[in-house]
Structures are given as structure tokens and as C-alpha cells.
Length: 240
Image 1: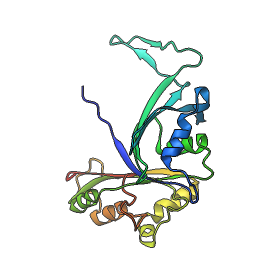
Image 2: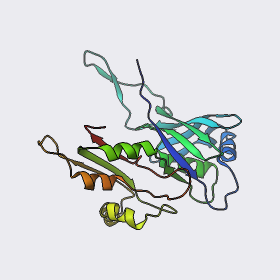
Image 3: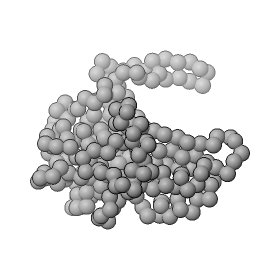
């Protein structure tokens, strides 16, 4: 059976003045043994499971161990019963990552019940004793924006935003398209927000095309080979 894996691309920004590469940082964390690798986060335990180092890349996976709200098992006849876990056992969700330390490009497996991008950062900050916050800036392919420009009809627009912090400053043009969303987040003190706009099953020409495209086009980085992206934003259209 085919398994679908979604990979998100980021550029890792290390704190100013931090003199270690991520390769050195991850090697330091990988030397921790036993429960010293564990990091409690939101009721779960995050743990570096395995790491592999070659001449160019760092490969590994993190475990999110969940020990409460555990699922039950069932059969085709509708019988349900609890899974027999030990006192210190739970559901282990794996999240793989691959990093090129030379460019600080991070490939992170997207796993809804695994380790999120923010938790990935938090883990290495805590276990690697990083003195300040690191950042993961989403990377976009120019092809994605070219496909967006060709849309003739957009029936649903989904936007997921994380509140900009640190060096993630929005330009004036970006504020024009995202200012309303950010104002709502600020008023509710929400570090993350999801918005969905849809015409539903109503027969129409879709959302106002120009406004939908403008809401999808924001650029937090004007320099460098990589620029932050529409990764936290997805659009669905008949032309996709």
C-alpha cells in the first residue's frame, strides 16, 4: 500500500552570535543518553531517536511520546478494548528530518500527531542549551506562485498564520494583505491562527479572484536565494 509523506522545507536561522552549526548542535544532543534526551512539551515527551551524520547532511528522527488520551483498538465486528500499555509506555509518533548545515535548509516531515516545526526548534534549543531562539522560515518554490497566478477560479482559500516574531518583519505591502488577520490575532493574543474562506456549494464564480491572490502573496524576505513562502497557506481551485 502506498504511503503518502508530506515534507516541508525551511531555512533555519540560528541566533545572532551563536558560533555553532546545527550539525555541531545535533551532535551534542545525540551524545545525551537515557532519559537525558527527554523533553516534556504540552503533556507529551519529545525525544531524539536516531541521528546519522555524513559529509554533508544530518538525518534523524524525533519521537513524540503520548501517554494520555490513548486510543483503543477494535475489530471489524465493532469490538473495542484498551491497548495494554505499561506505566511508562504510550503512543510514539515519529517525525523525520534532514538538514544541510551548509545552507541551513531543513526538510521536516509533516505529521499531524508528531513533532511540529515549533516543537522541533524548542527541543534543540532546550537540549542543546541554545542561549536564544532559533527560527524556521518556510521556503517557497517560484513554481507555486506561477501556478497561483494562473488560477481562473478559487473556491476555497485556507490561511494558517504564525505571529511574526524576531526577524520575521512584514513589509508595508504585506501588511496591506495580511493586516486584518494579524489584527485579529493580536486582539485575541493568539500565536497561531487558521482562516478558511469558501463559497461552499453555492453556484458562483468563486471568491473574488484578485483579493484571494493578494491574500496568498506575501513575502517576508526580499534577499537571499530562499524566501519564506506560502507553506502556511494553501489554496484549492479547479485549476490546481
